[in-house]
Amino acid sequence: MSQAEKLLYTAKVHTTGGREGGTSRSDDGRLEIKHSVPGAPGNGTNPEQLFAAGWSTCFESAMAIAARKKKIALPADLAIDAEVDLNTNEGGYFLRGRLKVSLPGLDRQVAQSIVDAAEQLCPYSKAIRGNVDVAITLV
Image (cartoon, rainbow, N blue to C red; front, side):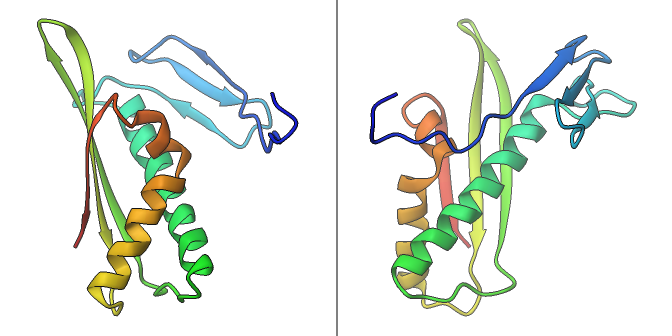
């Protein structure tokens, strides 16, 4: 870590059992979930749902930072619908992701500038850039 870097947070999660009935629990006890195979019956979530939730939450925070820098108030009813696809082909498994961002009441050009800035700020977007086929749409 360089002198300019500052560690803000480390998530610590213990996982056992994988997709088929496994569990994950955070060290602070705030997260305790069961896993299941996507589309299978029963209780539990899957990594794709967790990624969609994390990415969209992080992206919304990045939009708030971008809007603050531009001195623009975000609408209280802003929303993001996230979709993460698990795919397979001859090369193995891969992901695709989409964010559909709603910023009601904002001028479309202003809203797009916030979405564009958030895409550059969001750590999730940075992490998957060039690795995952992504579409971020202002709706």
